[in-house]
Image 1: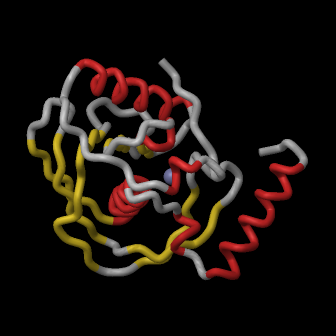
Image 2 (image 1 turned 180 degrees about the vertical axis):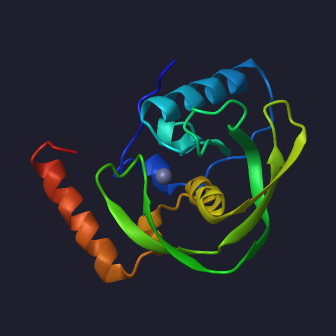
Length: 169
Ligand SMILES: [Zn+2]
């Protein structure tokens, strides 16, 4: 089932998510819905707070469903390692229409659990490293905006406020 994606202005996007303790049917439904919603958007990553669920769950698929077996599901993920630094343009399904250049480590290793609670380790470089960091940021209540210089951040927030006033956000 597709779930609506919340946008900047929703408080849940700026609140740290809670650890998952029950690897039950409702978690599996949430994960399946998130994958479906990510593909439909379309996007390469989605975190549970973006569909209004305050849990530490995210999904990533750089192929957006075009290649089998590329979807990564991470429950309770945390960084094991980060290194390097690279500047790339980044966007977010909760900030449709906005992109900015964000500095991120080039390489990241994340440890977490899969949908059944088994330990998984994901290692990524380039775009995958960026997606991992973007999604883990969501689980801390952080958006890519929070990684921009304040001048740049304020300019985007101002535009969104204006859009909201005129009912376009
Ligand atoms: Zn995002």
